[in-house]
Amino acid sequence: MIKPFRIDIPQADLDDLTDRLSRTRWPNEVDDAGSDYGFPLARLTELAEYWRTGYDWREHEARLNELPHFTTEIEGQNIHFVHVRSANPDALALVLTHGWPGSFLEFLDMIEPLSRDFHLVIPSIPGYGFSGPTHERGWSAVRIARAWAELMRRLGYERYGAQGGDFGAGISLALGSVAPEQVVGVHVNYLPTRPVPDADLQLSETDEARLDKVRQLMANRPPYQALQALTPQTIGYALTDSPVGQLVWIAERFAQWTDPRSQISDERMLTNISLYWLTATAASSARLHHDAPRGLPLPCQAPVGVAVLPHDITQSVRPLAERLYDIRHWSELERGGHFAAMEVPELLAEDVREFFLTHVKDDAEAGARTGTAV
Image (cartoon, rainbow, N blue to C red):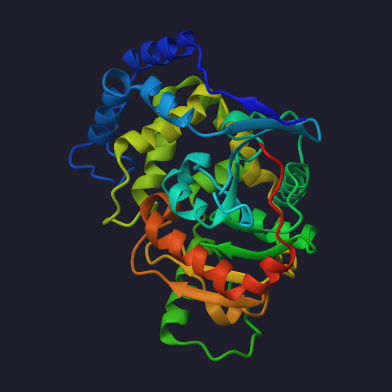
């Protein structure tokens, strides 16, 4: 059963957040530390004070409630999603999937341009936001993809596309694997390509530089990733109990992974962080790092489109990507980082539109359905 959903955070939870922020126990910092030891104290105290005294969750909650929210239960797990129908009844449907430490909020600025040509289904990953928390192990990218396939079946879509970045890219590609008869194409804005020592490929200097960056990351695993992959419950205690802990855990990712030219406001970032805090999903969202499959990706039979962002964590190497996927579209965007849907929504939306309406248009039109009226 699909049910309408409205965001309504209890006032007691907001008052508790304000109280906890007012009682933060701050660590000291060495002189002229900058970012050498981690996130700078001055910047964090500024963000925390604004979160406590200037940020208004109710204002953002009201705006979010202007969107059509729904929930349904799949495999015993609550699934929250936004469903925006295009004015074009024959439009293709797209599933847009976020990653960590993002949320469905990543796609807010893409809804208007994309809904001109597509029906949009924007779920929250199990364990994240209003879909969370999870209560059992095993919610891997493949299992989430199967849940998305069931969600789209319930909505009446027989043919659809998928798009995502970060974990959303892996889930979208997995959806193309588990529902090959339904998925007409997959567009991703994050596609890690690991070095293949025995591959007989001619790589450009740019490609080799990109692989060197990947090798460095593989040799020096980021601390957040190691903690969430190995002990997500342990780090979850700190993040669920301390709003400043949750704040810095995500704010540091935004600081490190975005294009310096990007204009993601503190308001937008704090809304995303508030979603994690108010739903107490720090631990359950981190579990995806633990449960995500390792090794070679699943084969994806659907055509694939790739948008490469210059300031992302890594940049894809096309000859390696083509060993795994049917690459029909490849774009090197001029700006943007890991949170592409928030940083460069206009560029990403246009790239998504070009891929689905140009490179998989015939496949999409052959089987598109309008879906049920929710």
